[in-house]
Image: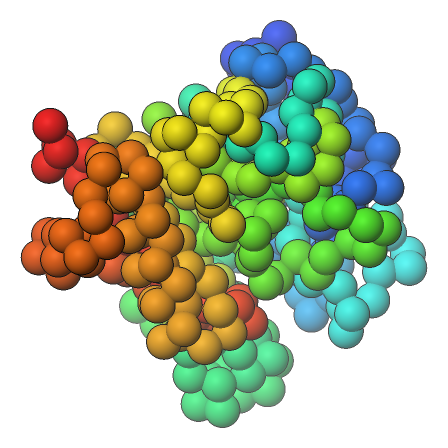
Length: 358
C-alpha cells in the first residue's frame, strides 16, 4: 500500500488558500443555507485547496470510529486520517435518521457573486489522501432495495489503490478473498454546490438546483460545474469524494475515499451567463469535449425529460439551433446517462460534443 497519507496541514497544497476539514469548517449530513457564516472568503478566480473527508468509516452503522473500522480491513492507525477520527467524535447532536451521511467542507464566500449569476467551479487537482476506500450497501437502499443487503447490517467492501497498476483500484471477488478484481480510478467530487436561500439547511442526499449530491463521474480534473447562484456570495462547498464510480451507483455508494482537491471559483455575471447558456434552472457541467446538461427528479422518466428540455434550451442559446433541430441532433448524436438512482432524487446527464458545432 502506498505510504503517503495526506493528514491535515501536511503534504502538498497547490493553492494559496487552504481549507482543512474540521468541526468548525464542515457540515455533516446537511448543506449550507443563506444564514450560514462562511469559513473562508475569496475573490472570483481564486483557487482553493480543500481537504474532504469520506463518510465511509465514520458512520454510526460502522461504529463511528474509523481507526477501529479500518483496522478490521488491515489498515494501521497511522494510515487513518486524524481529521476523520476527530469528526467522528464531534457533532454529538447528529441524528442519522434525520441527517444525511455526507461531510461537506465550506461554505466559501466568493466576493461579488449575486443571485442570477453563475458560479463556475473548476476542478484543478484531486489528490488521494489515503490509498484505500469503501463501497457500501446499507439499509435496504440502492437500486435493488429488498434484495440487497442479503443480511442485516451494512456491507462495506474494502478496495485499495493497486500498487502494481497505477490508476487502478483492487477489490476482492468474495468476502475474505484476495484482491483480484481491478478497475480504473478517476477521482471526482460527488458533491459540489452553492447555498440555498432561507434559513433551513437541505439534507445532503438529494441533489437539486443548488447542485449538491449530483454524483456525475465526468467532473474529474479539468472539468467545470456551473451552478445558479442563489444567495449573496454563493457560499460554495464540496464533499462526498470518490475514487471511482459507475453511472448509476447501484449499490448505494461508489468507491468512496477522501481527497485533497483544488478548485477554482469563477463568477459568470448574469448577462454573460444568459448569453452563453440561456437561463439555467440547474447544474451544467463542462469538459474539454462535452457540455453536460442535467435533469433531476424522484421519477427517473421525469429526470430524463428534464434533461432533454435542458439540453434543447442549451443548444438554442449556445449554438442557435431551433428547438426541432436541437431535438433531432440530440436524438441522433447525444448519449444520455443515468448519473445515479440512489439519492432519493434520480439524475440524468447528457454528453453534448462541442466539436460537432462550428
